[in-house]
Image 1 (tube, rainbow, N blue to C red):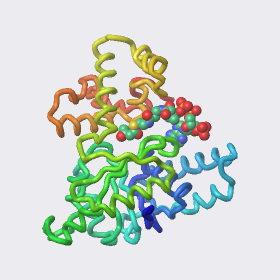
Image 2: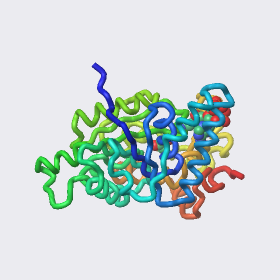
Image 3: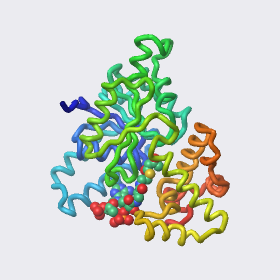
Length: 301
Ligand code: CAA
């Protein structure tokens, strides 16, 4: 029997490329009203402009009618404060990869949101178990019924960029996640048109435990002078049919995000195979973040 996701209203925290993509597929495919919050007004403006562009393209290509596009756009409402999310049935957090930031957000969710709301994180690598521990209501023991209920509604719901295009969502269960939370989150991802795989809560989950060493090895090849940037990317694109070479993909994900994920992998496993390359660290020191700010392994205008 299929489980209903029960999401009548979704909250999305973060209007960057991931948060906006999640709002887009939720409003268009799952057809649920979305409350979108980001502390940066500029980010919200950029995000909504991208959504308008994507909807207009889908209409122009005959994939959806203009009425459907309008309905999807009308389902997205911007809220100026986190408190504005208080009545949602589920929230997806999509902010940058920082554990202290996510801990403080999940503590606020525990304080502000309904006790039965599902609290999902789109983290690419941070422990869902650690994030769930932050959702134990203040002044409550993690082992008490209220503590277990607070953490039990936290789950990892890992989307891939660009969210409207990529077909996968990786579902991650914290030690504390209840089976009902997991089933409802899975049902929601399916309603968004995604295929779902599951991973244990290990650093990087399945996706980034495999992808990041691959990207890092490509950066080390460049660092050692094994081959040029273009030859590294072309080898993987034409030799292995990858849509993007690893250096191009690193720029696309964001070099700061790649480094943050690699640091989580390295610190979480203490295995030297995950040690970030010095070149990647230096590029992030130089604030060369890839496609998002115009300079990475490639230049973007
Ligand atoms: N948002 C929405 N749609 C986008 C988009 C974006 N940012 N970028 C491209 N698209 C759409 C295009 O509009 C186009 O749609 P139509 O078919 O409707 O025209 C479609 O994607 C194909 O785009 P293009 O023809 O411009 O270019 P392409 O064929 O080279 O495809 C790509 C672009 C889909 C990004 C492709 O290069 C690709 O699949 N690259 C690999 C992406 C990838 O691996 N993503 C996962 C990164 S890892 C991650 O996200 C998670 C993590 O934890 C780090």
